[in-house]
Length: 156
Image (cartoon, rainbow, N blue to C red):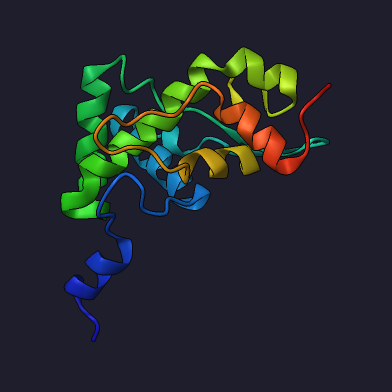
């Protein structure tokens, strides 16, 4: 059956631990950028480097900017409907982790501190789908170490 109900079930997210793809993250970032600064959503968001594909983080820091968070909510409402707030919470969890750990990610080869922060696509995917406790959502400080251990890339 085709219709808005089917589309909502396909796109909607019932909670923080539902699958969240890098593609959806990039689309959401583009929508947020357009809502905050019209025309900004056309900026380059993927960069191929020797160490792999990097995702450029461009969205304003939503947990530090209440006006941008409100604009983000409005921008994602059309895509996710009643699940928009859960998606924004997940977006912010990952964004906060990446901003706080930018220097460590650069050192570990999972990101770059440049003009714009970049993160390795595989690590972003890992964080977007990391299981969190909905009662006290948060990504653990050692999530990067767990990723490196899982992938066998931890530096000695």
